Length: 213
Image (tube, rainbow, N blue to C red; front, side, top):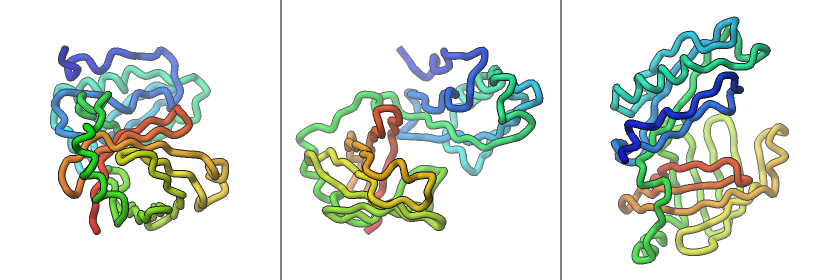
């Protein structure tokens, strides 16, 4: 079944912001594409306007993008939502369907040696300035405003854990000691790999990382 035709099947009558579906598996994304919108919530807590932001959008399927717009305009937040009477930017991920359950073949484990250490960057349209500095024991993620530090532990050639050791602000202090489990699920070339990460069994992300040094 072609998932590209059936990705907007879950609608809510009244929801909060965290319940908005942000990740969709489709057949026509090469790896991961993005659609960034600006949406406005009216006084009745309904999304009334949705505008695509082309500079932060890479997905090209206009039919699916229209479905996304219709999906968002069908959302009714709770009547007392703090989102009312304001506009916000939001990025949606369109991931190739094969990555939903893909596992890296053991024949490709040898390629993982090249990405154990070095400098990397996330290939995500929302944070292109974040640089990753990775050694055998630590990982530092730095952008113009913040620095996160982790202890890194490799469990297998394609799996590692990141344990929060330092955070930039008090609001993140609860993360100290928490673990992000990361699995490399595809090697695209000598510089790029696809990962699936899991924080606290509730934040599961798929992304692409590029080695730059």
